[in-house]
Image (cartoon, rainbow, N blue to C red; front, side):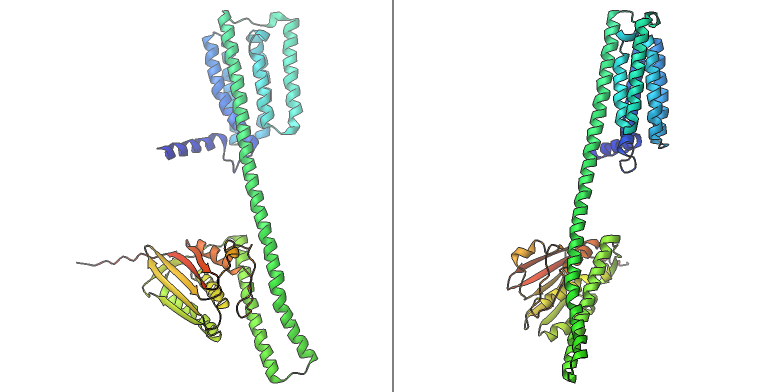
Length: 439
């Protein structure tokens, strides 16, 4: 029941006040004021009827009609400043007339003049404030002076002393209610705007920090391979080397270029994900076959480093995942496992079904992750480290793994002990297969 009521209130609040994402603060305050003014003036109109102040009641109904039109002008025609100016003319004009028909200075009109000025200044642009103040003060001084010099202009409508007290009390309550509602709306809107501003500032700060880290990664990790290629061509130009040395240098340069290409691939994919927002295209994947194909490349790399790579996956397991994203995640994790495992070590890639999820684990017998680096392992705050074979990295691969895993509706985590090894886990939703049998 409570969520339904809350939804109903939110719906009608947006209908009356306006969506904060669409209407600026001033517009929402004007709409709030207009709504409460209409409600309060309706009560005032009926109070005037009870007190036999028929002219004041007629003026109140006029205010209701005009204020409703001005509310429509701002809320649905998006003409806030025009509505504010017309409101100033309306309020001051009608209240001036009401002053003469409601016992003048002994009545309650002056209180409402003060309340109207507060309302109008709360919702108008700063450049309109002098105009609003001037018209309010001018009208009030004019009607007071006219009463002073021509008291016969004032109509006495209070039949009893109690009627006068009641009218002043009601007008006072209307005034403080308008001030309360206005102040509350301003404070609430200010607090919300401050919260949104702080959120945006924090997001911008984090984005700038990531940008600085990204550029430092590019500056550090691209400089080294480019320097190696430059050094190779310099040696080729200046020295006469034999075929064996040339072949060895070309092999090393080819490895450097391959690593640089992997680096650029990760950088570009991560940058695209941050700027455009990547969407996962989920498909049904037979995980056993998929993992076998994905690990073929790393089998050769692991063999060259004398590392045993084993894949254990039930061929019947099917998951919902994006094939390209999942491949990037698995390859980055396998690449890290090979990178940080010493020659003679082992890596086990396993996939098992647990409940309605599949758990993919990549376990290595490598050097492990120091405890001091574990908290930031999935962020750009961590720095890249060289592998056991002096392999270089960017510190960006695990950031990409986390982003892509979560985009697929999955979860990634790890456990690690220094000098003993690391296991990374990926949880993905299983495809629930239903078998139909006929009679």
